[in-house]
Length: 463
Ligand SMILES: *Cc1c(COP(=O)(O)O)cnc(C)c1O
Image (cartoon, protein in one colour):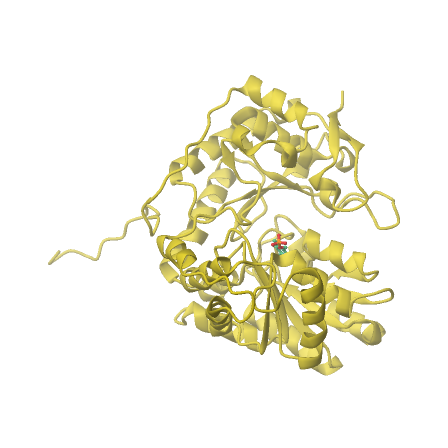
């Protein structure tokens, strides 16, 4: 290469090659129309074998590595004191050095435990944006969930490098008025329900300062901590030369505890944990853990799961992996922006969010434009997405129904699972549906459960 500049290549290289494959089943549009009608137009009720590209969620759907599968073989299934627990605990503490680490079967179990101890009637839990299960667990305890993301985070087109940031003034004014009712402040990194948008290190420090001023604990909902840390590495001045693991440790140092879904960045198919420093709180939480999940050295998991997660935690902070991860999500988003499909920008870490309200202005929020778009993507191309809008968040605790802040359709990218040609196909499907947007019609709900209705509600097309 003497005499030549160092070459710059633009193709995104997946930093792995394929070791084991799973077949995909092709279906026709007619088959899919039957499948979705049979499912009451709820994509959660469609059988996975009737889906071609499954972007419903990035939760537990990623590909584990060779080394994670090898770690599974290393699992020790002793009921108490399994060495697999200590391997897991040490891997967690390498990044999040909290005194107490309680394994749970997934993230919502950690939420259920912490809010059953800290929540209750009259309590208020602030968060940048509560995820659906987080909000449901806060509300199930009788407490009120309040979302305090910055104004830019509520505007799908606003340009801001850290749209997941907490509104510091709003947090401060809540604490000024109701400090006694707030047992803990939460912050979600990245902000899943707000578009997978990151929170800056400066904002996390500012949240910490407010918590200190009012003597409040700060907990992380840290599901996508590595993606968030990569955005800090890429976007926040002064952090571009740091190791991502080091940024993660700084984030952890600002918090008093965390809830975690290990089905996200820890690259597991199942798992989660609850961690904290406070001994009394840990004792109370451990008592609930034993009642609902399992003995404290396995929680809701098998020894083999704990080992796979320990290995996943080492892999997720790799810069090669994170560069690929964030760029490949951006590749899908940028292509849709270029094609004129309205998407939430900047593109988040784990998903691209289509702005269904903007694409389908003829469908009012209470006729569920996100539902209409998600069904159309499935019928046209077998692509499964999820509505994050009025279906998910419209029903209020008092029984009334109001439009959600945004009507989005999330295309979540499972980790290390689909290739660039799969994503090129998804882009074509989105373009096709966008061209026919004016033909789409709204939906009405036929049947719904009292909470988390999006998982099981059934729908009927209008008109
Ligand atoms: C997935 C998720 C949860 C809940 O975790 P589960 O493992 O699905 O129970 C909580 N918060 C956020 C931000 C999430 O993305």
